[in-house]
Image (spheres, rainbow, N blue to C red):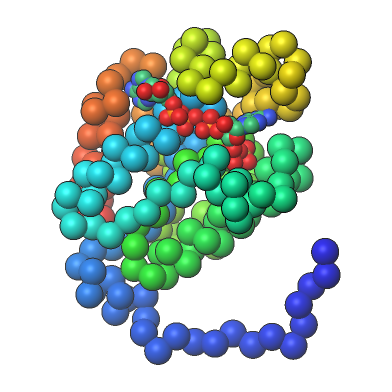
Length: 199
Ligand SMILES: Nc1ncnc2c1ncn2[C@@H]1O[C@H](COP(=O)(O)OS(=O)(=O)O)[C@@H](OP(=O)(O)O)[C@H]1O
Ligand SMILES: Nc1ncnc2c1ncn2[C@@H]1O[C@H](COP(=O)(O)OP(=O)(O)O)[C@@H](O)[C@H]1O
């Protein structure tokens, strides 16, 4: 891939702080990470609905959807997953700059890639949420039939089967979707955000 040269950063006339002030809330990323079927999308969307009801501007970026468009040229090799997360991180940063809350639902299996996203944001702008669910339960749910395909060898490099998942070392939040209901898990996130005065 070639690199751009002769480019200059253009400052916007409206600052992030001004946008936040107009929206009347903080802007940040809720980064959900976990195995396929752990409940990232379900919880992200449940939280998004609660935020919407509180008039907090937000948007969900979801793994499958992004791979239909922006990242349609990426597969599931280690390198492609890293590039996937790098791009999502940059997109998330734009959302934060626009004064919105962004909820991301990507497996994002590598600690280093998640840390990279954390580092391009400010400290109060990145909340790593580990959607913790035993693989046995994810496999039992198998909402898209992908574990079955991975077990039969039809899908290669499937996370948790023949591709690694690195559990977050120091996440801001851990939610256990194998033990608690969807509503309870979503409420845990809302309680955390309130405790930090983010909402
Ligand atoms: N090999 C392999 N491994 C894991 N997942 C696979 C694979 N092939 C397809 N899928 C489907 O793609 C979704 C994961 O995409 P992500 O962009 O979140 O993955 S990653 O963060 O780049 O690892 C994932 O979505 P979720 O089930 O919502 O996690 C799957 O539906
Ligand atoms: N407590 C829970 N939290 C999240 N999802 C749950 C929970 N209990 C059961 N589920 C079910 O598990 C599945 C999770 O799928 P999904 O949200 O697509 O996971 P992911 O985005 O991590 O692949 C859904 O069918 C959902 O209804």
